[in-house]
Each structure stands twice: as structure tokens, then as C-alpha cells.
Amino acid sequence: MTRQRIAEAGMAMGLPRMTFVGVAALLGVSHMALYKHVQNLEALKRLVAEEIFCRWQMPETVGPLHEPLEAYLHRFSASLRELVRRHQGLAPYPIRRSATTPTMLDKIYAHHEWFAGRYGLTRERARWLLSTIAFHCIALADTVYAVSADDDVPLLDDETEAAEIEAEFDRGMQALVIGVLHMPS
Image (tube, rainbow, N blue to C red):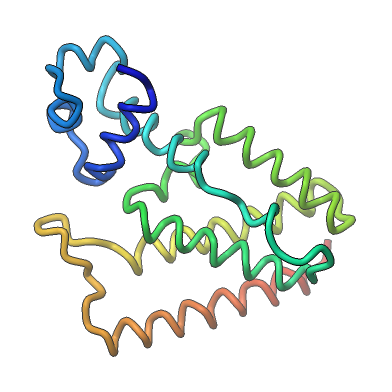
């Protein structure tokens, strides 16, 4: 049983509904066998969240070479939004320090460094811009794309309402990006 297989089983089950017994069953082992690899349910969720986050391709490696800062922040926001939409329950792990793993922090800090270098920003300014966008985008996406705990039905299942909320999400993130870029350093 590898970390990779455990993470795959956890992702298949989903963070909100993950149980030790359920993941063990997906792996074809007893829950006691799983305990030999992972201490408890929270550690299992952290392992899965870390794997999801580490697989996520931050937008730094794609896109135009001379992309304007504002355009990059919109693309970064869209990427985070999609990550949270696809992985319900992920939100606390990248935004709460107590839930973020060292591996996740390494990826975040490396992105801050890359971003600062690419746009000629101080590390602190880069950190603040990216963290502010990430925090608000992840929190909003977590709310907008929530799934009913009882039946896996998206709470946002009316097409007209979904389109309206998507448009408001876009406008809200656009306002946030414009706002953070106009705040003093």
C-alpha cells in the first residue's frame, strides 16, 4: 500500500465524505491495515488534500511570456476556482496555516518567489497579492460549489441561477484583482 494508492482512494471517495473504513474498502484492505500507514482520519484527509494540491498545476508554467500582471491574477484565480470546484472539501487545507502541510507550503512559497521574480515585485508584495486572491477565491468557490452532504447533489443545480452566480463570481474576482493592484504597497 503506497501513499499514492491511499491518496487515489481518498480522492475517489472525496474529502467531505471520507471515512477510514471507506478508504480501506476502496483499497481492499482492513481499516486496521490502513492505520499502519496513516494515524487517523484527519491525517488521511491531509494526505489526500496535499496530493490534490501538489498535483494542481499553478498557472506559472503556461500562458504568454509577457502576460500583464492583472491578466495573470485573473488566470490564477480561475485556476484556483476550478481546483476547488473539482475537489470539494479542499478549501481549508491551502488557506488555513494549521491545516496546510509543509509540502503545500513549499509549493506556495516557490510560487511566490516565481511570481515576485516574473513581475519585479518584492517577496512580501507577491505574497500579499497571491494570498489575498487565493484566500477570497477559495473561500467563495468553496461556498458556491458546495455539495449537499446528504446526496451528492450540487447546491447550485438550477442552470439560470448557476449562470448568474458564475457571472457574479467573475465580476467579484475582477473587482478584487483591480482593487488589490490599486492598493499601496
